[in-house]
Amino acid sequence: MTTPQPKSEGKPETKAARADGEDSRVAQYLAGHPDFFDRHAALLAQLRLPHVRGDGTTVSLVERQVDVLREKNRELELRLRTLVDNGRANDVLAEKIHRLTKRLIHARDLAHRVGSIEASLREDFDAREFVLLLTKQDPQLKGLEARHLRLVAADDAGVRSFESLFASGKPRCGRVRDSQREFLFPSQDVAVGSVALVPLGAGGSLGLLAIASPDADHFNPTMSTDFLARIGDLVATALE
Image (tube, rainbow, N blue to C red):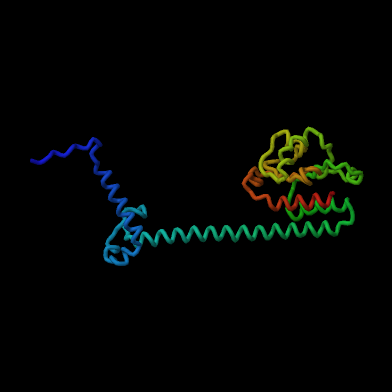
């Protein structure tokens, strides 16, 4: 007499579940045997992939692989083009910083160094609106104050609004608060969409350099600030 087998308490396996399990086993087998289609070339030619091109046609697996490789090649070309463009842009920036360095080396005194900084920002870096906001109380600087150079006390409320910038010791790009914008660029004629803020000296001990752009995305928070930091070091060294 045959002993009846106990019934499974779980739910019966569905057709979709069985198909998923079979797909998984096939995928695992092919992954473990990459030479499978080398040994079954005829099968490779028979496999068809429907609608991969969006026009209702079918293509062979080989054609599909070629399409995938072409797409990867296009992506690699785009990445390479981006790297080349970035390299060229960095070369241009490095040359501009080199010209700024030469200007400062040839400056005879503090007045000429300030003039060299302003000329380089305008001519080399195409900065239309910028301000050197200095907390250094130097008698020589007082006679040089103008639109692009302002002397303020270190405990000024406007200066204190940049304490987080000074604490970080690193340049920052993006938009600023209305009160900060009005403090840096009080003229109504200046259009400020975005700003690059560069602390000068350790912990902003000398103040900051602010460069404005009417374009809200020109100085964005994601951009690299390495070259701005180098400019800040040069300017701070020249003014110390």
